[in-house]
Amino acid sequence: TTAAADNRSSAQWRVPAGEVHAAVESPRGRLGLHVVSRGGEGPATVEWQRPSAALLDLIPGMLVGQKLADAELSLASLDLAMAEADG
Image (cartoon, rainbow, N blue to C red):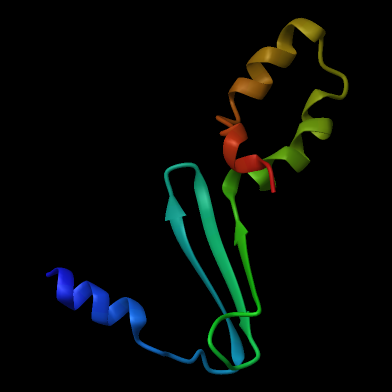
């Protein structure tokens, strides 16, 4: 298996020009991937669209008019994964 892995890693492959968007449902919501290629040995850009990052935009609207004591429960209800929100 090591020889097969070595051959695969040294193989030359080209990415056709164009762009593609794909999405799947993840445990925390929609997880998207957008890849753009100009043709060549790799993609020009790769962009992940993470569920928690999209939820961050909801926070200001959720907290307006609420009591401070209720803010913690409101934020917890989003089930944010802050590690994936950065980006």
